[in-house]
Image (cartoon, rainbow, N blue to C red; front, side, top):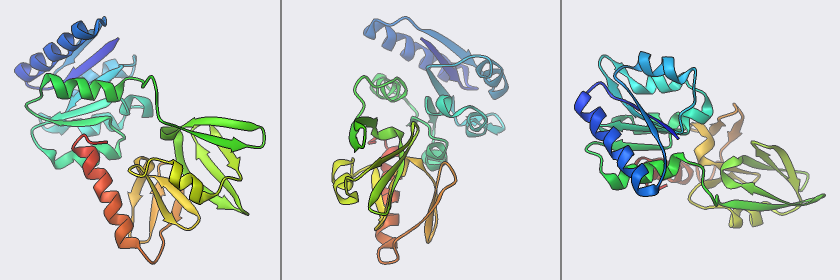
Length: 236
């Protein structure tokens, strides 16, 4: 397992690397922890190799770690943990699909939680979709949004489009209510896949624009903000 730590402060870099090695020893894992003092050094390594988890300081000299991570591929960003002295960049970090956001000083417990978010889950929450060819289990994290067309629900997922006659009401009940939001009568969105929450619509990470229900836009925005803050506090 390859882990990376990028921090311009030697003491903080060494401390975090030590916590990662201690975690690996407790878990019986073999790890290689690569440490970098600058974003350029990290990016030079990351563009030629994949890390199972990246711990990135937000403030790197005159630059920002968020800017460095923005140039990485989607899967690597999803395995990034931002570490900083301030929560100011938390929403920006989750806009990059980061796994977690830690505020210094870090502890063995929060490092373990962050690694659990980065590493593949042995039992991810799934939704079983009844299709014309039979039931199909789909990880909830792979669902971007669901829409109704002519009484057929279409699930837009990382694996492609799935169609089911299961009602949108039933799908709403089955999905994680803390992660999925019914933004109007015909659409459910995965809040983790929203890239922009506007005054009258949301933009998904694939560029799709979905209008918000006119009657409860304030409530929808409040739920989305609660989701973001729960993510920033490590509750999701």
